[in-house]
Length: 420
Image (tube, rainbow, N blue to C red; front, side, top):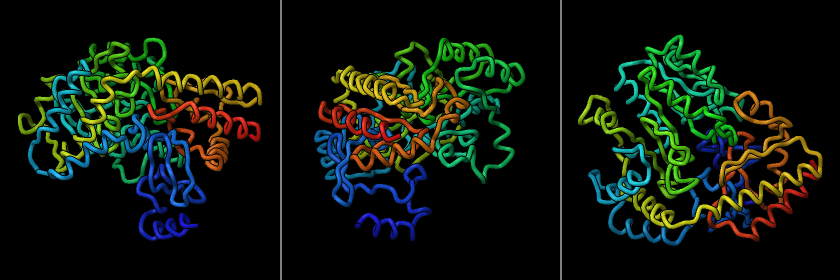
């Protein structure tokens, strides 16, 4: 097949034939050549209903005509100026007006860059050295984030990464998500030297794990007590559940926020922002350096503006209800076929864990049967359903998904779960 020939060429060029590890799976990953709406078509001509959506950004669906036209129009005007442009002002204003905690912001080229700069800024602003992150929480592929991280590092059984100096890893303290006692213990021992806590408010790189009880509120209280900063990594959750951040839904105001994915409309993007007095420490005004040739580039900003302007008028209950109905149908099949599985959902993102218990943190997530998930993934592929290939990733619903997609998805799951 054409895909096999192309993948052999890719393996001669790229490690394992891919440019991001989460794209690889055996025997060879699907290679897409085009996508429209909720569907993606591979190089062999096979069509799939897509629940990966580029790992989250494509909330309007693929090749949205408004976004495409914005991008085409910008291409004719120029794609990189190396100077400030009107597009970044317009998109920045949209984000600032929608998210209550963001007074000033900086665009970057990826979520990884956004969290890296936010962590550096937190240290520079507070003058403290330690960062607290959650076990299994993923904040990109830089040294300070790849300590007990999630996403692809869990899939491949690598809790961290080679190449990170010991001196770096010693400045990152690891607590347990949904376990405030573990965070309190860390602060009781190191509180005066902790610059910030960074966490996804809803974990999206360990499957989907929702915050329990007053966990997020308690993080806010403990950081205020010790004059540390609270960083919410909303690269996944930003504008996913409504035209706002998840922080605005739960009413908790972090000091700094990182975003990406949706705000770029599918183009490479990241953003960090927050309190004005903190952001004023960024160069050239302050002494915390951050830069990027492609940051705020007109092409990405155009895609982001086109996406955000449409989302502003969208009824998010449409995607929430779709995900809720799919959850209900899958739970019915799980019960009917006596499968040891549970589904975690937060609005329009969800994950099926092959785990008979409740999944609330890193330890319960890794207790899931990842091998069975892989079997399910390949069986769904055969039936034209595309999920992210890991038990520890997240499925997403877009505004382009239809009643027909739902029916076909449920039918495919019925067959697959019956076999499993």
